[in-house]
Image (cartoon, rainbow, N blue to C red; front, side, top):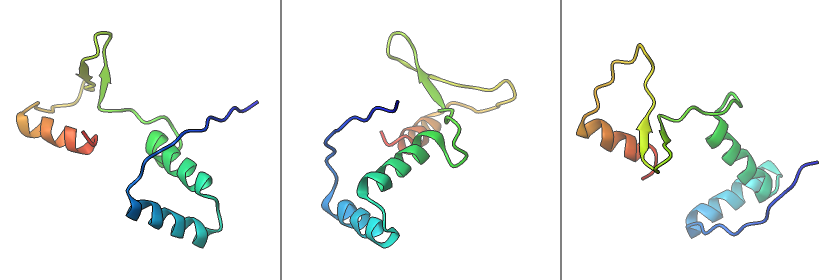
Length: 88
């Protein structure tokens, strides 16, 4: 049995108006639009759980995930790019 949770989300007026218009054009509810968008953000286009570029350790610190063949150099520019991509 699926459970649902109600919540309140504060959105910029322009974004909400655009979302309402898109839902209306697609003939779907805002709930459906938001659910699909959130699923894509969390799982990616393939529907599989997205592997974030970092995880949070037991102390609350971010730890970068690095594959064995990854040659990423962690520089100030890389950290800023990562922060921007994560919306921080």
